[in-house]
Length: 291
Length: 327
Figure (spheres, rainbow over the protein chains, first blue to last red):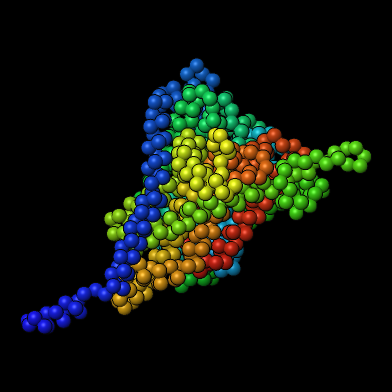
């Protein structure tokens, strides 16, 4: 290659000042996006680390198995209370939510579907404290502060979650499966329950677990319904009840180290349960959501 | 064949099917009745307040309780939600101001840049943040985040621009124990996952061919994001921010723990205040009579706000089945 043609080639290959600037901006923006992605996950690690470190010294058998007024105080009554209230809420929510999701996916006309989905959207957006007011207005005048009112509030909050996920996963079941069942002469109701719903069941279960994890962590609607107590109460009409989120809320501002420590330990238990439930049901399907 | 049409084929149906479908439809009707009952109970329980004052005076009065002397010597109490409304608006706006850019940028990284082996765990971790109960965030904020913010960002802003702008200044002497700004910052952390999840979903739905076409014409990656991806996903991004705003408006417990629950409209962002939700949480247990219906009226206002946002989002992004990424 001659000297002249070499210099022409170099001249042509040299990036002009505009493209240098553009690729520099491109590089900067890439770093900005990376930093933002890092910032979005940073709180998760900070919170987990912090709660873990603060809670560890307070985790012992007495913490789990004693009641607040015992000589070595614990949160046994709150654990039992949380299980009872969330459990009752799920007992109310699961049948209604699943049935509604099935109806919207399998039988409803497109107009009813659109109305039903709007209802679900609105209820999903209802702040937990408003659901709490609803339960308070409905049940507290009759029963006094009571665990039933707390469960009702939790049910209002979890119902749209279960209905939405059920509808979504039922929709994913291939039509051909229903066709095959119906072609065998199996009635529609049996097809729906034993074939379609059964195929979609892992997804329905995901919705139930997510709803339960929401119910376990919800605090605001319980403050003025179940109210919290030091006693170990069971689901009777008109009894107050303790719950793990209430323990955290009440002890967070306490002066005694013992109580603050219990708040941390309770937070660790609650967070671990919520994270474990979410990991269990979400990790399985993560590929389909990212790919 | 469409599922519904399949199920109404005459040959496939037996007598029991009619009752079965009705039973299933009862669940959807229950959902509707629940919403009606919710609205009905809020409206009827707030009635005693509307007998004393108009909604407009309720929403515009800053002081929570004012005793007004009547001509016959008795006093009538009127209530005001303006301070709580102010707190809700300001904390939510602070939250969105922080969370919207970071969340959308983070989503851009996940969709446009991250290789699959990075995108999968990162997306998963973001989803997990949303799973942490808000009371845990509240506890962490009270014991750690709040103090850090007070000694870093707040102190820095107050001692520079705060010298000239009163609503960014600190209490002379010592900084206050709680502040509106800290509540807003905490809300930003809590709504981030929602913004990332929803905006990611929309950016993913932008066809790859659009980007390829633009890059093929010589555009850089960033230019293809700026000129193709963001404009195409615009509606979805607005929807994502609106959904997050709705979440921020209604968030109660974490805010109640860090905002300080002070009466009145504070003169600076770095002073304690309250929000609609925190006011309800602090007041409803002890409230009786008209005060109770004033608290319920706060709840009604909050419900109407979130209701409007839900409808708005639905109208905006009706065609996309995106809300599933949220719940």
